[in-house]
Image 1 (cartoon, rainbow, N blue to C red):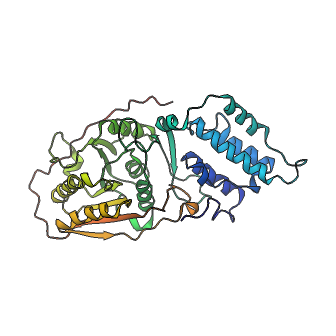
Image 2: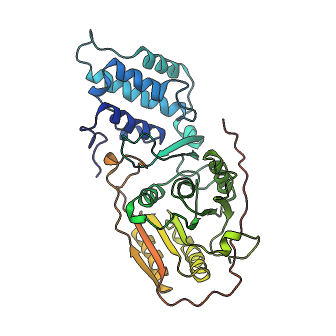
Image 3: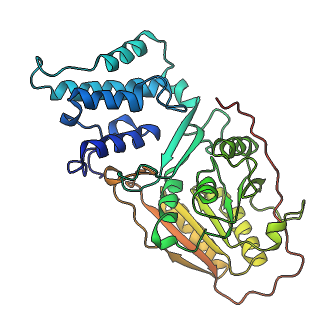
Length: 373
């Protein structure tokens, strides 16, 4: 069981407590898991700072949806009220109460409807709270577990955040910087955007097999200033199908260095196709590193994936990376109650020299279709 949301925050100064809350708020962390300061919020100057940073109407260009803002503000006001000792000297901010009154007078969508709507989610790297220029990426997501279109690829899952934290750690040095990277099942593009924008990749190819997801991937590249970049592209890649050269990709002729995947092993029915694609990549580009992060919801399903890889004589290593409990995290917030693992795949046997020409991954350039405000 993870510790409560206040665990690990007692020693933080007020500015760091507010920064932690801001990072969680922008990521739309569940309200009951927010690190909302108690007594530290009572001074009027702190309430003013909180209003200016989170709740002032023009404070955030791409902030959380109103329903989420309303729930967080209710929790903040309750925390302040519970810590007021002398009502004659301490009081709630008029600005905060005014925003709350506006929410109460509004017709906000119900919880189910709100979950289906798209929302901006901003992820901050797990850097020290005093580092105000921490890496940030904003994605447009649907927070529903399964969207109305039937896909799970329109939200960022725990394994992607776990992989992101690993890639920013010292243990991942050399995996991405100045490398050609392919992401399988990219979903919202969290890992691909991180690699292209902040980790110094030479080129990133974000792939997925769902047409709707591919459209949203294009939108998220645009949100992060990568729509016209030569560093990142979007490709349609359906697992199990042959890697046929359908267009010219100069960078793939130079080879692929790293293949990444997050939360792509959860469905036992797609494991054969996934392993087939991994096999094609490993055969076509000998020496590549394959790094896969998984939330192990079902041990049998994950074991089947590992057995399928071993049957092809791949060398499998479990990387020794552990994220702290969510209450102690400083960015890329994700639950660790369900086991999270990161594995590395390599060819164990001597690979045959590839036959020229190397197959290029079929690239479909996807234009962003969502209007960005």
